[in-house]
Image 1 (tube, helix red, strand yellow):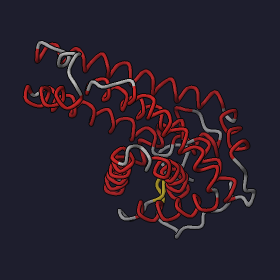
Image 2 (cartoon, rainbow, N blue to C red; image 1 turned 60 degrees about the horizontal axis):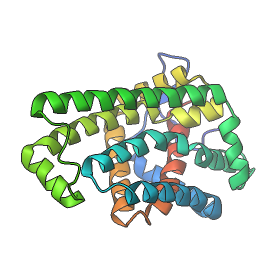
Image 3 (cartoon, rainbow, N blue to C red; image 1 turned 90 degrees about the horizontal axis):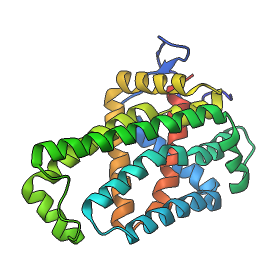
Length: 258
């Protein structure tokens, strides 16, 4: 791996990989660096953004129920980390002075395939457990797993809000988001760059989250805001938001893990 270009920070190690200390505001720098990566690879980056936007559009087109939409957003949350593999590869090759295109970046999916598959399987398992748990909790606490299936998006959302179901669902979704974020902060680029196992990458991500909690809270908040912008612009903004976040994932890894 090429040498880190950022300012040296104290390091800590209780596992096979060192974790660098960073100031809480550092995620803002990751976004700036990611924007440069985006500008250096505009067409491949936009291709990934268009792919995610198309997937989201198809999902929202055929779902008009708030709980179905929430389930779709959950699926996006779980698939998102894996979808950043190609974007991390674009940034990785740029750092090594070997710019590549969209097709070449797809080859990263075959690199360390066992680890990436193991990571994906863990995300699927988390999603299944969460879906079952949320259904059980809603059924037990409220006597219903959701508003009437014939409801419109806004009518169903208002019904869910009035009954308290939406708040419970949002609280559980926030918990799921925190878990997925914690295990995936640096996992994908680490498996790609260091050939680490899924377990090693997840363990390092958890250590990073615990040790750099202020920066991670800011980073998670920035991701939430940017993704919200992507959705509030009828998904058009996601064409830029998603690739920038993918490149930023690589930038975060480069500064956090050695």
